Amino acid sequence: MKNTLRPAVAADRDGIIALYKKVARFSGGLARAEDEITIDYVAGFMAEAAHDGVHFVMENEATGAIIGDIHCSKPGLKCFDHMLSDLTIAVDPDYQGQGIGKTLFVGVLDEVRENRKDILRVELLTGETNKRALAFYEGIGFAIEGRMPGRYRKPNGVLDADIPMAWMNPNFQA
Image 1 (tube, rainbow, N blue to C red):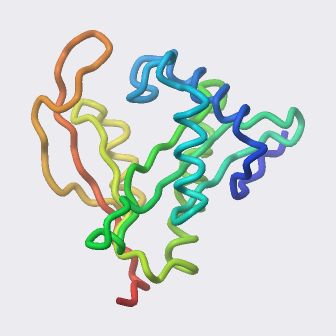
Image 2 (cartoon, rainbow, N blue to C red; image 1 turned 120 degrees about the horizontal axis):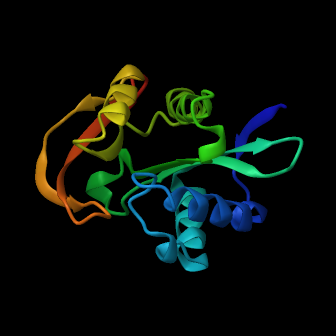
Image 3 (tube, one colour; image 1 turned 135 degrees about the vertical axis):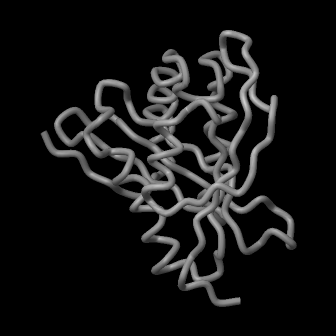
């Protein structure tokens, strides 16, 4: 079964919604709960990424299903115009552990390195207790930049620290 990494297009919206709802059903899958995955939410981040960010999907060629999504965009203020933030990744639980997340990240980082010399930083947040994610992000070049205690409430009500991380574009040109 072949999967294809490609830029997201507007026609992917419903497939992305289905993916995010499926991922949100699993504890730790996404920060948003399933009922918070709305057409407006997905259309909003798709529009932002299309305007000034990066957005890729992984499509299963056999079924046409969107099995992975990654997007980030500029925060919208001139003082932050050199960075992409609000990075979110979702991989269908049935396909996790197959390198799809890494392929999605490599797609974004390669795009920034090769075609977005206006971007110095790509930022993300992850929970401190999500050791697997922390190790994964560090393994692809993200560095921990701090700790925000009690910022994130897990579905079970327990508070966790958010860990801000960033990857720096070696080809940035001010």
